Length: 362
Image 1 (cartoon, rainbow, N blue to C red):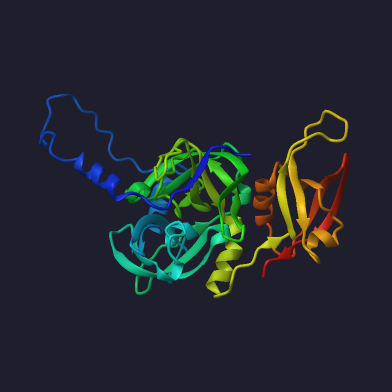
Image 2: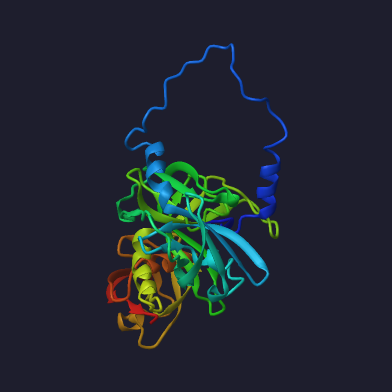
């Protein structure tokens, strides 16, 4: 279970960008020749599989997004999906962190070549923090190549690209620090969680990187940068990278993209239960429990049909260990309605398992 503050990184501050700009001018010497010896090795071509090579490949597919509405404004990043102008980003980027409805957002897209155009919001899915916007009349777009996040390994090198604090086309690199890290960043008024089994990376991700790509060393899209761990607890404070960034795995996003493109309301897998964290002992033993306790079960749900009961403690879904309610929600979010899963649970001190077909919130 994660502790500390998780922040979504959609809104880069104007004041920060202004401070950066003002610090660049007004000093320095004019260009000229030097009497000191200089070694000129030439501008060598990027080595295959290097960060330089990946950046050269991916940068034309990454855009900066400016969003305004309701008297508020913010910025984020996006990635080009096709030559028709479809762009993937985060829901919290186009809604300014839930401050405005997506259909009231005024979105401006800035391309790598400097071109700026208005975009329309195609659709959003708050539960997976996914959004699509579209530009029209723009030629020579370069879609990103989509890879498989399931092929990632811990320790594998990755590259993040985006517009942190409004600094367009910023490239950072690092490794995959962890996989299937349960991350919950928000809940709506009905208690539905925005959660996902995240790719954790130490590549620098900052406010404004949200919606931008996390790519492997083949330049393939494997995740959408979405949130960071912050040490700040101050109200309204914007903290920068401390090496704990989180991306939504692209494998989980693709079905949502297809539904949004088709004009459909996205659907999500459901067990049909309300859950809570659990800590205690198993019977009279000294074994400390961790898992998600079933607080209530919906009539006719997948969980009820499979024989699960109130106060059962779910400890794993397939081979995914469940440490708490956040972990269970994020894990179920990685499946699709109709998928069959094995649920391992404790009833008292007895461990059992059952197989069930996940329901749908549609």
